[in-house]
Amino acid sequence: MANTFADRAKIFVRSGKGGDGHVSFRRELYVPNGGPDGGDGGKGGDVIFVVDQGLNTLTDFKNVRKYKAGDGEEGGKKRCHGANGKDIVIKVPPGTVIKDFDTGKVIIDMADRTEPFVLLEGGMGGRGNQHFATSTMQAPRYAQPGQAAIEKTLILELKMIADVGLVGFPSVGKSTILSKVSNARPKIADYHFTTLVPNLGVVSLGEGRGFVMADIPGIIEGAAEGVGLGLDFLRHIERTRVILHVIDAASVEGRDPIQDIEAINEELTTYSKQMAARPTIIVANKLDVLSPEDREDILTKLKERFPDTPVMAISAATGEGIKELLEETYKMIQTAPDDVMEFNSEISLEEYASREVELPYTVEKSKDEEGVYLVEGPRIEKMLGYTNLEDNKGFKFFQEFMVKNNIIEELKALGMQEGDTVRIYGWEFEYIE
Image (cartoon, rainbow, N blue to C red; front, side):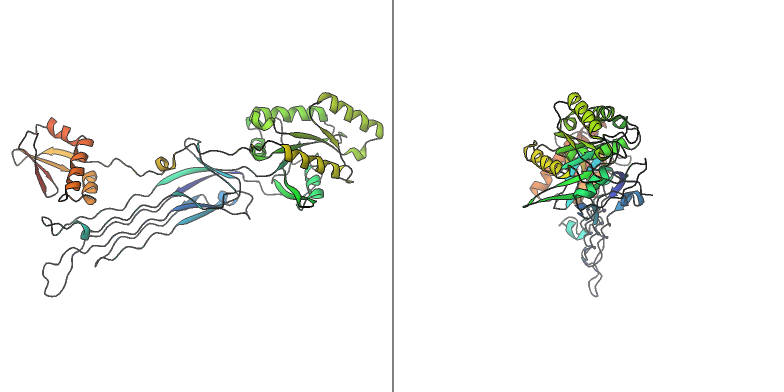
């Protein structure tokens, strides 16, 4: 029995955390008070997606659902830089669309993208305490922490890329047609279980002419509402430029071919009006088992019921009408609108991959000293880690930081007045209105 086709998968990805900067001091003979020599942390690994032309399903993602890049190492003594974390490279088949699980929005359509796509960048390593020595703080005992990792849950959807899509109910002969006209070798059997894996084949007409044909697994009524596996299979038709609607014209299975066409047209329209408007050929298969009179009767009925859609009679079993069908299909591809659906990004990658986390801080009035206020916490430490307060530009940034984060307003609410002292991790400032 064939493996269940996986055209949709939910995965968890995590970029690497940046390594923390290190706090250390030189310890040398005859140098009792060596300066700071803490090294920088290593950069965390990236989460990277690449298209692998050798893949045609998302089956691997059913077995492995978590993908984590390596964390950067902490910096070391003697200004040693921490090692960078290892990137995680995730291979996906052509036609994969990456979506955010929480919102369902498209992040990127990989299609047959040739360049690697960096979805999440690893965190930058923090700077060691060697960078924070100043004339007033010659032995800084803090270092910059590495940037946090980014975690996301994604949905991968495979929307197969082909010029022509064969659609129709199970057992109408789509797999047989594909095997006769292309280099594809799909498994073919006379049973009612639909093919589970879409098959791609290259059709060559000679003289450099040809196209890619896909046997889209059988659709059932209610597919557009998610009945059975139909909804999954409908996704694959979205990229095709021409649809070959294959029917069992001989009603070998007792089905009414006209009702089958109407049912599937309804499914296509319900799922996507744009997709339902694709150029279509009705392919009346299995005519080899009909008498000439019955052939003429069913073809007349089809043309009367669907006057705007070309109807071509074939027998996949004997090869009758196949050459004519391929030539007509090729002509239709040349004139088909070149508007095959591509899924535009619906998310700003810059915002999606942002690490901006509102770290906490505290603002307190000193219990021991009159007119002294204390400002501390991770957000303040982080700011000090990348700000040189002895530099004019750095001090201006510090002032803007205090205003922007409403810290000045909070200090005033506690009673701070002009001339009072604000103490921040060893730094003291006189407040001036």
